[in-house]
Image (tube, rainbow, N blue to C red; front, side, top):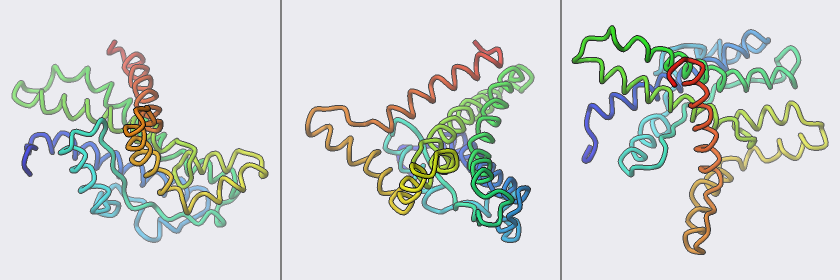
Length: 227
């Protein structure tokens, strides 16, 4: 690909694929433990990335963002199927299933930050490659967790909100799920474009994600003794 090296691909795509794979597998595993074996029976409770990769969301979209020097890298996988009616306690268990993905990403980010302390044991010719993978694993996992916790169905944060809010608020929020992707496209692409025309900063979603991501990364670096 013009403008992008194999080295850049290896230090961005590898941690992205791992982050997405673990995120989706965590959803399926927690759903299985709480009574729904839909994902388990389909072989989606797996750390094999080929079971989760979406050609556009996992490969093409991140590549486009890299080539266009987007402010952050983002991707997604094929959603793990969950039949919430099969869960032992559908409403609250839906919350646990939704939280499993972002929580797994935060755990992976914590492990990546902790692993910085082991870079001194890596041979010199490999240390930079490992360091770049760990740095990007930290960034990608935190972005994935923060973005997915936005309270917009079908993102994980939307499902958490639907499970925790009183019915009078949860019902109308859940009805937004078929339009969630359009809302995200509007917030991520159309609103900023409109804002540039009006000389206003309407890049609300990206600003929220970048700001919260920055705070979470600083916290993880602090608790792992890196700052």
